[in-house]
Length: 57
Image 1 (tube, rainbow, N blue to C red):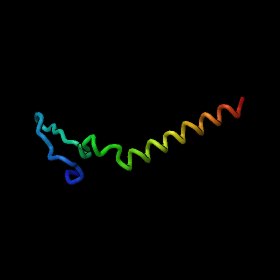
Image 2 (image 1 turned 120 degrees about the vertical axis):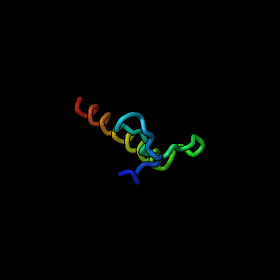
Image 3 (image 1 turned 60 degrees about the vertical axis):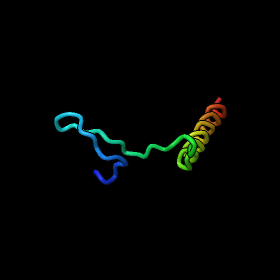
């Protein structure tokens, strides 16, 4: 599990640690391809729901 983390874990207290599980992407490289795919997918879902509601009226 520790190898999947993008940053080394930081010790907080006792047996509690904190680490990020994804890379910190700089703003100039955004939107990433994954972000674009997710946005397109969400837009299509919203459009399908809207079409579904308007056709049932």
